[in-house]
Image 1 (tube, rainbow, N blue to C red):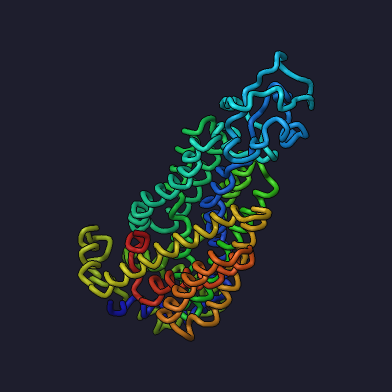
Image 2: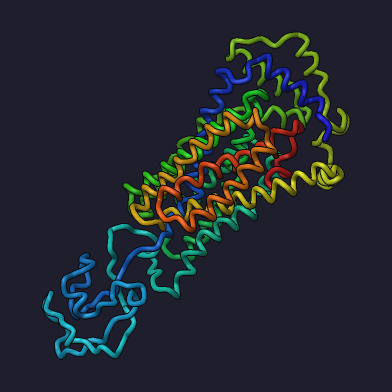
Length: 468
């Protein structure tokens, strides 16, 4: 697609007012908040819907309120009770006594050839997830835990195209505020869920409202950064998401009750709204709506904070900016069908969208697969999750060094191949160290895809196209 005139002039103005001055630093300080919230909210189900270790309660041998997971008499009565195949069945009690004194049960008190289903369970730790509160135990209920993550992703799939349309129509800033507020409200309501069905409903509605949080904040942050600083700007946002993930693991480590954890995660979203309200609207969106006065006011404010001035020549060029279709036919007057036909009429753009969409699909599957599987590795699941989150940081540093020097295409190809190879190799090499190395290369791949799509081409496509 040819380079848009308004984009050339706007980049020139950004160069004059400072590509990353005090104004941009302030904007980034605000935009990292929804990025961190997105990391906390999107992956919270890893800990709220995580499975737990438990065994059958043997009421004839222990108090129903017991918290002793592995008492001395347990193996003597049923050695398989602590294994997965024995978690939901126990031997039939045959003693004449309805309940024996604590510690006096023996194998003679049970019929070793008869099994009965468990009525209650004893959990290994005090950790509380929906497994404990909603009695989602045994293999036949495992699908309910898997469904939580699926529903979360379905909510994102449903919402993103709609949110993109609304963002193009009403502006990035307002959609960001609604996204943060709505997600925080549904997250808090979820913490008070009284049933599995209510929990699932809130798990769906949360991403329906909040899934555009990351993309909108990313665009608002990156659009006011000069071309030479876009890789740096992208890295700041990416680091914020990584720290958000690590913060999630840290909070989950100290708040083991899923209801308390959700409240700790979501209340800051509501508290941050007054600060996010002070952010500015997207200049490029204002230009697409022919609201040049508002756009120029923002740029003058940025120049003042950065200690710069906008030259008369830049002002005149900016004042002559027209939308791609001409001043009489702005994006605001075109129908959505016309915008879509205009985008599809460009083969290069269509090919790029298909290519980057496939790469992004691959990235999402592998990236979140690594994050989700980290809590299943041996050792402390919270530390594993934190380490897998923070190990991305070397990848961001590597991207900062090579992306502008090597280019998007070569970086994307190399990291795609290396990510695949490391994932395959990790199957044959045991150990957390090997597993933790994977996100380093994969992180560079991740950000290259996004920058290849968003920044290497100068034309600012509508958010609908970006999110779809």
